[in-house]
Image (cartoon, rainbow, N blue to C red; front, side, top):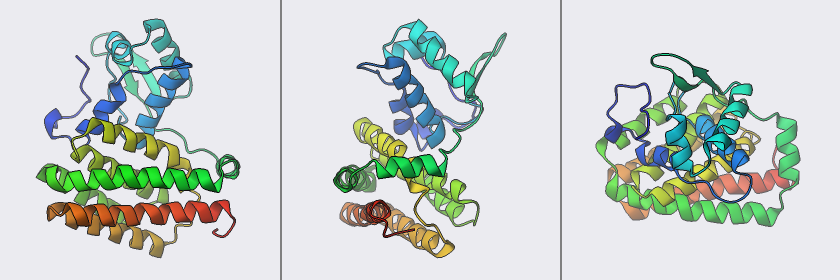
Length: 258
C-alpha cells in the first residue's frame, strides 16, 4: 500500500525493515499534528527515512496514522516549512525527504538536561536496558546474515574517523538494526522511541577519539555475540553498554562529567 523508497534493495532484505514499519503505525491521543510531525521528524533524524526517499501518498499515510487527511497535510506543511521534506508535482511526484533534522543547539539541550531529574534518567536507562537487552537476545537467535553484514558495515563506518554527528547516526542505526533483527515490531518501536528521546542528549557526552574507540569495541563484541547465536552474551554486553551511557548522562546532570 505504501510507496517504496528510492532504492534497488529488496524490501524484505532491508536491515531496518521492522523498525521502518513502526514509523507507519497509528497515532493516538491529543495533539495529533504535533505527533505526526515528531514521528516523521524523528524517523528522518534516525535514518529510518532516508534523504531522497519518497513518503507514502497522503491518503495512504493518513490511513496508516489513522488521522484525517487535513491533519496530515498540516503536519507535512510544517515539515516542508522546516525544510525536511519537499513536494514535487507531476509524473513521479510526491513528498520526498529533503534533509535530515538539524541538531538542537547545545545550550537548549543543556537546559533540557537540567530539567530532567536523576531519577528520570535512571528510569530511562532501566527501560532502555530492558528494551535493548531483550532485543539483542532475540536478534542473536533471529538475525539474518544480511542484518549481521549491515551491523558490521556500521561498525566500520564508526571506526572511519568521521565527525561525531556521523558516528552518532551510525551508532543509532546500529541499535535500531539490532531491534529490527529481533523481528518484534513492539521492541523496534520502543527502541526507535528511545533513540529519538536520547538523540540530542548523547551529543553532550564527551567524545574524544579514545572514548569512541572503546564504544565501538563494545559494538563489535555485541556483534560477535549475535553472529555466534549467543543470546545470553548479546544481552549482557548490550545491557552493560547501555548502562555505561546512562551513567554518563547522570554524571552530566550532576555536573561530574564534561
